[in-house]
Image (cartoon, rainbow, N blue to C red; front, side, top):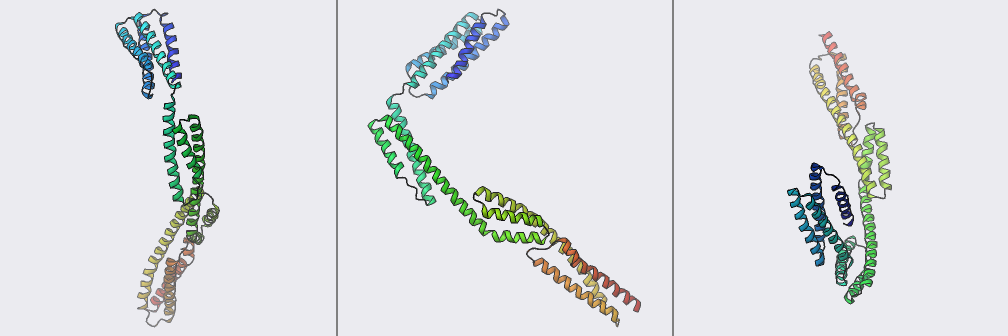
Length: 356
């Protein structure tokens, strides 16, 4: 507060010194407005300090009222264009507000024992509430934190304040504060350890799922993803903070999404192959009715039917497989069988056509 007022008082000196050296009327009018702004800002800051304080002397109010009256007179003089009167009222107002500020400072420095005792009583009440909260936290965490010492200090502080021993009370309150911080720190550390323990249990619970995800990644040919998942799994098992565990799980989720995308593509591939197989089976059944006594055509058609059944079973097995498979594998296995079926059915058609 004093620093702010020093700025205003410095401005007051500068403005009042420069004010008399500029005869220009326009400049003088402008400076008059500046004087009003300076005094209004000063008054506002002083009022804030007066309102903030509780028990202040009558002298503070008297000086403040004097400054307020001079502010009103200054404003009137400026409105009337009375330069000399404005200057005098400005100086008088600033002097009054400076005295107000000094009186406030004196008031703050002269705290009575009753005021100090009241402050200490409030502090004791605050500490008592904080200790109750710490005890509740301790009970919730199921710890064996010892509150005996801080309880004794609290009782001692109450006894000292009852006897009016201000300095002793102040000293004990400092010890309570220090002890309370130590207990708070200890409870925080215990809480963190509990969280880490629960997080590790969570990791163990999901270990099988992570291993399954690694297997799926390998099945789909995602070797880098599988390696990254294995590394994250290892980091999870070695983690000793909840933030590390959360970070590794985020990485695993990202890789899981990648595996799921590939899995969807794989399932789409199976559906595509299945859609190719259905019309081929119908065509084979149709050709079976046209065979008559063509042994060569019958031989190739039986091979086609066998491959159709094999391909259908392959698709069924892959649909139920936990890891799925990649598109390249589908093309090399089922895709190749479907192409062979097409070739066989084409041969059967030709043989039937030739023999007819």
